[in-house]
Image (cartoon, rainbow, N blue to C red; front, side, top):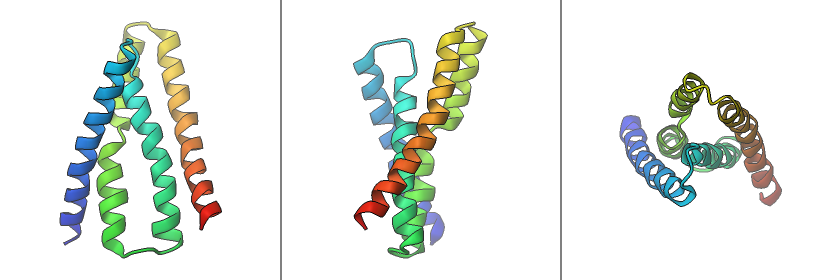
Length: 124
């Protein structure tokens, strides 16, 4: 049964990732991976919230964690794509774009996770 919850969450997360990243990419219309950066920041914020509610507050059961954290957010965030895009920019010698993207992704996602945890704790 856990695989069913993870699979359902993963399918929803992957579709959401595609829709959000594509919409942002089209909206920004720039040669910078804003879509991937956005889903990583959103996903990091969301996993901070999910962790507080599902793990620390023990809301729901294991199937909620499997669906939301492992399935949905596991498929929604895209650090594998982040890695490929970073290497691609480095190979193209787009140094400023590559290092900006890597720095913003790392610091921004860590901050977004912390912000999600803080927000959840402050309203619980």
